[in-house]
Length: 98
Image (cartoon, rainbow, N blue to C red; front, side, top):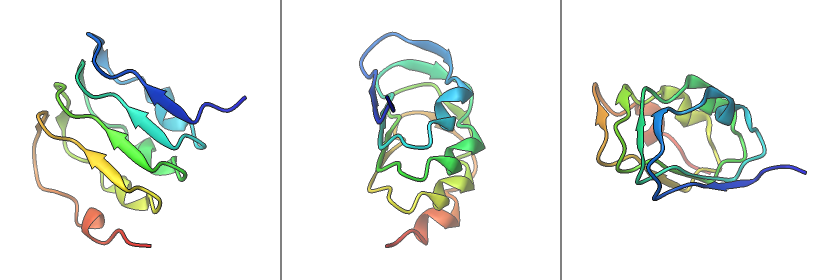
């Protein structure tokens, strides 16, 4: 079996997002919003080539938004609002198109 949709939004999960999640290359939807996750988004997210949606709103994630998100050519939904990111939006996000 292949995990394609992980929806754990709206819980009280805390701590860093396990980096192993970003190794699930066949995943199409990752919903982690409305928790208390901290730490950063791993650059390994760039290997999730099938990912169509990444929802991480309303957490305590810090650091920068990794430019590797720009590798996700199938990504149509990206919600990172209400976190504690610093820096700028990677230019790679603006270059995403099919």
